[in-house]
Image 1: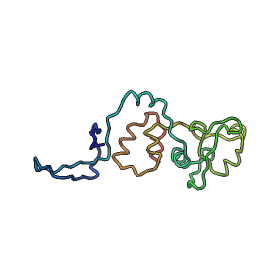
Image 2: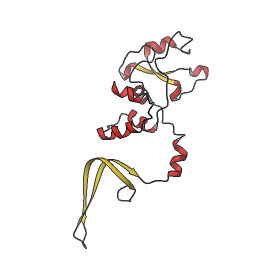
Image 3: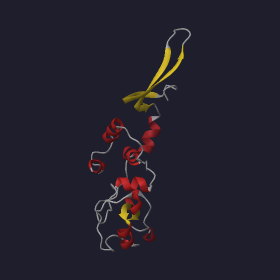
Image 4: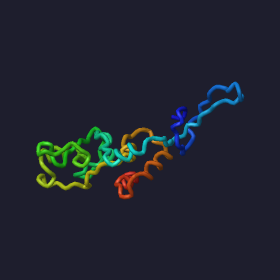
Length: 169
Protein backbone atom coordinates (compact mmCIF):
# COMPACT_ATOMS: atom_id res chain seq x y z
CA UNK A 1 0.00 0.00 0.00
CA UNK A 2 2.86 2.37 0.81
CA UNK A 3 4.66 1.50 -2.45
CA UNK A 4 1.48 2.00 -4.50
CA UNK A 5 0.85 5.40 -2.90
CA UNK A 6 -2.43 4.18 -1.39
CA UNK A 7 -1.76 5.30 2.20
CA UNK A 8 -3.77 8.44 2.97
CA UNK A 9 -2.34 8.83 6.47
CA UNK A 10 -0.85 6.79 9.26
CA UNK A 11 -1.00 7.07 13.02
CA UNK A 12 -0.24 4.91 15.99
CA UNK A 13 3.22 3.66 16.80
CA UNK A 14 6.05 2.88 14.41
CA UNK A 15 6.12 -0.92 14.02
CA UNK A 16 9.18 -1.17 11.83
CA UNK A 17 11.22 0.64 9.21
CA UNK A 18 11.95 -0.96 5.84
CA UNK A 19 15.16 0.20 4.14
CA UNK A 20 15.37 0.02 0.35
CA UNK A 21 18.06 0.68 -2.19
CA UNK A 22 20.23 3.74 -2.69
CA UNK A 23 19.25 6.13 -5.48
CA UNK A 24 22.10 6.58 -7.98
CA UNK A 25 21.10 10.20 -8.66
CA UNK A 26 20.68 11.49 -5.11
CA UNK A 27 22.66 8.98 -3.06
CA UNK A 28 19.69 8.73 -0.68
CA UNK A 29 18.44 5.42 0.63
CA UNK A 30 14.70 4.84 0.40
CA UNK A 31 12.79 3.84 3.48
CA UNK A 32 9.22 3.15 4.48
CA UNK A 33 7.99 3.61 8.05
CA UNK A 34 5.22 1.14 8.80
CA UNK A 35 2.84 2.32 11.52
CA UNK A 36 0.34 0.28 13.51
CA UNK A 37 -2.63 2.12 11.95
CA UNK A 38 -2.94 3.21 8.34
CA UNK A 39 -5.80 4.68 6.36
CA UNK A 40 -5.89 3.97 2.66
CA UNK A 41 -7.43 5.76 -0.26
CA UNK A 42 -10.45 4.08 -1.73
CA UNK A 43 -13.69 4.66 -3.47
CA UNK A 44 -15.92 6.28 -0.87
CA UNK A 45 -18.97 5.63 -3.04
CA UNK A 46 -18.48 1.89 -2.74
CA UNK A 47 -17.77 2.06 1.00
CA UNK A 48 -20.80 4.23 1.70
CA UNK A 49 -23.02 1.81 -0.24
CA UNK A 50 -21.93 -1.29 1.63
CA UNK A 51 -21.20 0.22 5.08
CA UNK A 52 -24.84 0.26 6.18
CA UNK A 53 -25.41 -3.30 4.95
CA UNK A 54 -22.23 -4.83 6.36
CA UNK A 55 -22.87 -7.99 8.34
CA UNK A 56 -19.79 -9.65 9.82
CA UNK A 57 -19.59 -13.43 9.49
CA UNK A 58 -20.99 -15.27 12.50
CA UNK A 59 -18.62 -17.65 14.26
CA UNK A 60 -18.52 -19.08 17.77
CA UNK A 61 -15.24 -17.53 18.97
CA UNK A 62 -16.45 -14.02 18.05
CA UNK A 63 -19.92 -14.75 19.50
CA UNK A 64 -18.46 -15.98 22.80
CA UNK A 65 -16.23 -12.91 23.01
CA UNK A 66 -19.19 -10.61 22.18
CA UNK A 67 -21.03 -12.13 25.15
CA UNK A 68 -17.91 -11.98 27.38
CA UNK A 69 -17.87 -15.80 27.76
CA UNK A 70 -20.99 -15.51 29.91
CA UNK A 71 -23.97 -17.82 29.59
CA UNK A 72 -26.76 -15.41 28.71
CA UNK A 73 -29.19 -17.48 30.80
CA UNK A 74 -27.46 -18.38 34.09
CA UNK A 75 -24.86 -15.58 34.03
CA UNK A 76 -21.89 -17.86 34.77
CA UNK A 77 -18.55 -17.34 33.00
CA UNK A 78 -17.18 -20.38 31.13
CA UNK A 79 -14.23 -21.48 29.03
CA UNK A 80 -14.99 -21.53 25.29
CA UNK A 81 -14.98 -25.36 25.27
CA UNK A 82 -17.92 -25.34 27.71
CA UNK A 83 -20.05 -22.88 25.72
CA UNK A 84 -22.42 -23.29 22.81
CA UNK A 85 -24.35 -21.14 20.37
CA UNK A 86 -28.01 -20.89 21.33
CA UNK A 87 -30.69 -19.69 18.93
CA UNK A 88 -33.10 -17.48 20.89
CA UNK A 89 -35.82 -18.40 18.40
CA UNK A 90 -34.85 -22.00 17.61
CA UNK A 91 -34.13 -22.97 14.02
CA UNK A 92 -36.88 -25.59 14.45
CA UNK A 93 -39.28 -22.63 14.85
CA UNK A 94 -37.88 -20.83 11.78
CA UNK A 95 -35.28 -18.87 13.77
CA UNK A 96 -32.31 -17.71 11.73
CA UNK A 97 -28.61 -18.29 12.35
CA UNK A 98 -27.82 -14.56 12.58
CA UNK A 99 -26.15 -12.33 15.18
CA UNK A 100 -29.44 -10.90 16.46
CA UNK A 101 -30.88 -14.37 17.12
CA UNK A 102 -27.95 -16.09 18.82
CA UNK A 103 -26.44 -15.88 22.28
CA UNK A 104 -23.77 -17.69 24.23
CA UNK A 105 -25.12 -20.43 26.47
CA UNK A 106 -23.52 -23.03 28.68
CA UNK A 107 -24.28 -26.60 27.65
CA UNK A 108 -26.57 -27.15 30.66
CA UNK A 109 -28.76 -24.11 29.90
CA UNK A 110 -28.79 -24.84 26.16
CA UNK A 111 -29.91 -28.43 26.82
CA UNK A 112 -32.58 -27.24 29.28
CA UNK A 113 -33.93 -24.70 26.79
CA UNK A 114 -33.81 -27.28 23.99
CA UNK A 115 -35.98 -26.38 20.99
CA UNK A 116 -38.04 -23.76 22.82
CA UNK A 117 -37.99 -19.98 23.07
CA UNK A 118 -36.68 -18.64 26.40
CA UNK A 119 -40.17 -17.73 27.64
CA UNK A 120 -41.46 -21.21 26.73
CA UNK A 121 -38.63 -22.75 28.79
CA UNK A 122 -39.16 -20.37 31.73
CA UNK A 123 -35.76 -18.76 31.13
CA UNK A 124 -34.77 -15.12 30.84
CA UNK A 125 -32.04 -13.59 28.68
CA UNK A 126 -29.47 -11.46 30.52
CA UNK A 127 -28.81 -9.31 27.43
CA UNK A 128 -30.30 -8.73 24.02
CA UNK A 129 -28.22 -10.17 21.16
CA UNK A 130 -26.83 -7.53 18.80
CA UNK A 131 -25.08 -7.24 15.46
CA UNK A 132 -21.50 -5.99 15.93
CA UNK A 133 -20.23 -3.15 13.78
CA UNK A 134 -17.14 -3.62 11.63
CA UNK A 135 -14.88 -2.05 14.31
CA UNK A 136 -16.42 -4.25 17.02
CA UNK A 137 -15.99 -7.34 14.84
CA UNK A 138 -12.28 -6.62 14.30
CA UNK A 139 -11.90 -6.61 18.09
CA UNK A 140 -14.01 -9.77 18.44
CA UNK A 141 -11.77 -11.65 16.04
CA UNK A 142 -9.31 -11.98 18.89
CA UNK A 143 -6.25 -11.31 16.80
CA UNK A 144 -3.32 -9.51 18.39
CA UNK A 145 -4.53 -5.93 18.72
CA UNK A 146 -1.98 -3.38 19.91
CA UNK A 147 -2.95 -0.84 22.56
CA UNK A 148 -3.05 2.11 20.17
CA UNK A 149 -5.05 0.05 17.67
CA UNK A 150 -7.54 -0.86 20.43
CA UNK A 151 -7.99 2.81 21.30
CA UNK A 152 -8.59 3.55 17.61
CA UNK A 153 -11.16 0.71 17.36
CA UNK A 154 -12.96 1.74 20.56
CA UNK A 155 -13.28 5.27 19.18
CA UNK A 156 -15.23 3.74 16.29
CA UNK A 157 -17.62 1.71 18.47
CA UNK A 158 -21.08 3.30 18.64
CA UNK A 159 -21.56 5.34 21.83
CA UNK A 160 -24.35 2.99 22.87
CA UNK A 161 -22.32 -0.16 22.18
CA UNK A 162 -22.41 -2.83 24.86
CA UNK A 163 -18.79 -3.56 24.00
CA UNK A 164 -17.65 -0.55 26.05
CA UNK A 165 -18.91 -2.21 29.26
CA UNK A 166 -17.70 -5.66 28.27
CA UNK A 167 -14.17 -4.37 27.68
CA UNK A 168 -14.06 -3.26 31.32
CA UNK A 169 -14.65 -6.85 32.52
